[in-house]
Image (tube, rainbow, N blue to C red; front, top):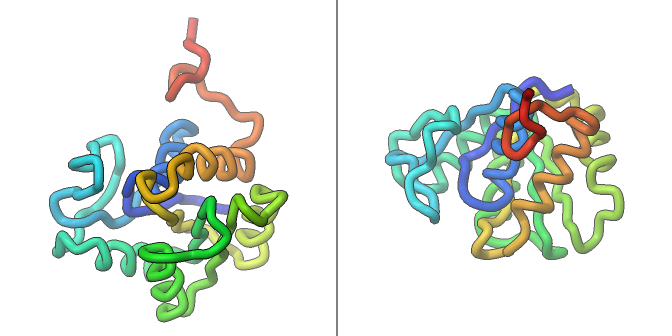
Length: 166
């Protein structure tokens, strides 16, 4: 089972993985571009990331694929394009297992993700996919899939909208 979730913290699928980890007080990390660059401005300090030497997004994409045990690429669309396709190519380059989970074709995405992690002995899971601006709603869907796959039934008080302690 996974012991850490990593991503580059771009808006959308990447950030969903980290936000689930933070909500459940689960170890997270990964590489982000120099200057903590993302499409919505500098990446916040709540994300425990290390900056790459370059501000180029491709370096962090490759390093997260390289340094994880496996990568999941979430999309709302049926096909993978752009940076998500580059992520898969980096996983292949570094001989890391990867899976594409699409809202348009996967009927049990959480079960699919659990099976991928189990079948490939994934401890460090890299979460990737399109930015929120490219596929509006990807954050919400990826967040729900990850939470259902690994944290179903767990609620931690006072974290990202959980019930307040009292």
